Image 1 (cartoon, rainbow over the protein chains, first blue to last red):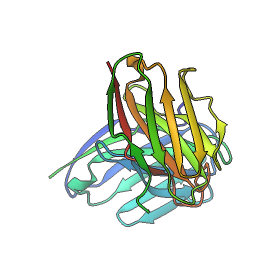
Image 2 (cartoon, chains in turn green, cyan):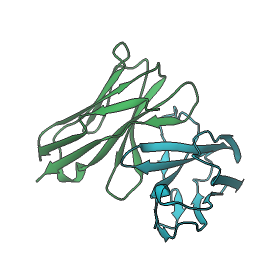
Image 3 (cartoon, rainbow over the protein chains, first blue to last red):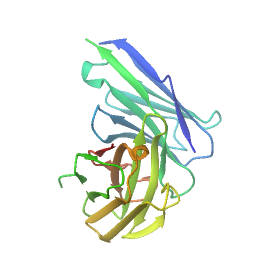
Length: 111
Length: 117
């Protein structure tokens, strides 16, 4: 069953603009992670945010977590064509259990 | 470390044939996962191992699927007999823990694209 669901399913922006992707999940979590997948490649871990954190930054990435709304957002600032990829949120279903992934947001950054 | 290594990258086989997918995890990672990715269902966890022992295989779709991890550096996923609906990209991933809460996440291989005709 899907733990996280990303929104929107697809997003197209111009280079230099910001991209925001959202993730909603169903059960209580201890961490939420974001991954990127380039076409034809495996997923790459971007950032992890723990349940006691509200915001986290890594380079041009900003992640927020609202546990009361069971939602997270990933913001990519000053997007580049190389950011074109699918982005997935993932959470363990409970405790130390494997990650369950959403279906992803396909981001296209147009140069 | 060269990362998680999967082989083959592409596999085309006829219905009814046996298919074996291979994975070499990152050295020192205690957990290994097999996922399947399709457009319709997204990423589905098939099975995972901890220290070479299968922990949960409830995601394996049918008895036609089997997975083994004979040692810490090698795992296989076998489909026998294969069917067209098995066509998908199969990923192997490894990590330090199941929930990857240390902050490093899962390391994925490049996947095997399986086409059953």
